[in-house]
Image (tube, protein in one colour):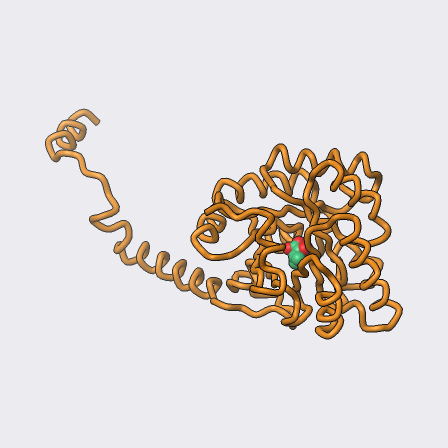
Length: 277
Ligand code: KIV
């Protein structure tokens, strides 16, 4: 059965909500066969897929391109796509235009935006345009240059207060859920208890209403980057290396391609060709 946005409100405080990022068709087909509640086409693709040091260079066209691929593979999942850096900070009009393209051209069903009070007019404009909005607070990676690195947020009283106020504002503006990234577990718990909409945590402990992870971290294909909050659940990276080594060995031993991998032609035809050339 196709998941909808309702899964978020239905599960709040009852069951945990599971989310994972995805950037390509083949992985989306696999995810569609799992019980995952929702898929995020995150701008983390700038790091996990494009190999950049941060997410800042990702464009709305990049997100549309990847969402189209994911949408074709994960037909039953509710797909949220990230609004990349500077696609939603300039004006409410520009924000609705960019989000509208994302929804119309890629099939995303909701958008995610990073920030609080400073983008509240943009969020209200999206909600007015009937575009479901997921908020994102805490360590918002698009603010990496303001934070001076990928640093845990919300440890000081002032900063924690700002995150709580922003969360309440996002809820009031009409966001259907909020991602809380890399904030202390007790702060995430407090926010989760204060809100009627669900919180989806990453690096924010177990008390949020759901969890989201970057797929390449979860399956172990991004071996050179492992933040403290990531758990690698399976080592696909190791399997890829083992598979490619076996492939090379079998090419060299003439074991691959084998009988079952080749196409036949009659000996008579070959004899005729030999005579001709
Ligand atoms: O871009 C992304 O993948 C994200 C998640 C890490 C929450 O924003």
